[in-house]
Amino acid sequence: MDIMKQAIQRKYHLLRYYYTQMSQLSFGNITQSTVYKPLFFEFPEDPGAYTDIPNNVMIGQALKTSVNAVNLTQTETDFYFPTGTWCSLFEPVGDCITTEIGQTWPLPSTLRDAFVHIREGFVVPMQDATKLKANTSVDLQNSPVDLHILGQYRVPGIQSWAAEGLYVNDDGLTVDTQGNVNQYYIKATYTQSGLVETITVQFLQRMIASNYLNTTTNCSAVNAADWLQTLYIYNADSFKQHDTWLAIVSYTDSEGDYFAIGTAQFDQKTNRIVLDNSQVPEQWVCLTRAFRLVLKAQG
Image 1 (cartoon, helix red, strand yellow):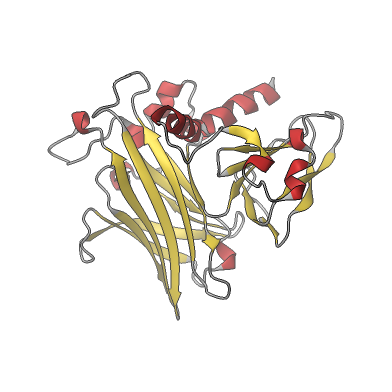
Image 2 (cartoon, rainbow, N blue to C red):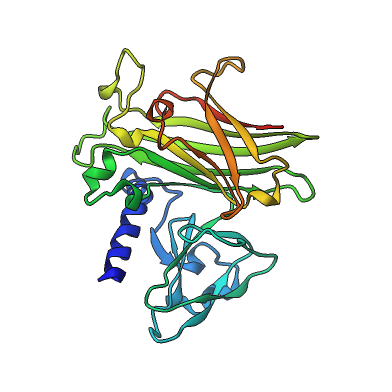
């Protein structure tokens, strides 16, 4: 029973991501293909992606599952990871997996073990259904969203990275998308100049739920899931020089138009920088209104 409960909760954790991926197929986004797919769909040039196919599956472009679907009595399995950095989404304690060339990696594989890793260079929308005590998808719509970010170093030798992703939210019922859907393209970057470190998360709306515009707040949130609660930056010790970061948000493209919304801290146990406003609803960020969110290293 506990195993089934855990599986359902994890499905709910990822419902925002699933919905976003499925919506792209519905909207006819030609850059998106099958959502649940074998590893070689994303890595066709990697010979290792064609081995042990049932146990190595991609969900969209950003998430890889490592589940032994063949031998349920095997306590440990060597799962294949293509070149790059992969960080565990549900068990973030410990080091991320980094491979310069694709290789297998041993992970526990009992009935209770089902690993999901975020791929470098991506932003994933998610909600902690357990903390939210969510029992239905409506419960999730009535709760804010979290963003999980794992940057990709794109220029060797330079301490800067980037990540990107999509997020789609609506009421889950309306068929007519015109003015009823919020779709965001999210781009995150890290830059360093001496001791000055900055993480910037930019929100660009591709679809706006204009029918939900609140003229008082200038926010077009369909429901609470259009509000950002917590930000997670993975693999932090690979770049960070500071443990404390001031979080500020801008609602325009003006560099001087910022408002403080809290403080992010480095969590050594999970190797993440975390901006957690779960206990401070007044500091949640309306994504339809925000232009960018910036973390500036302090100290």
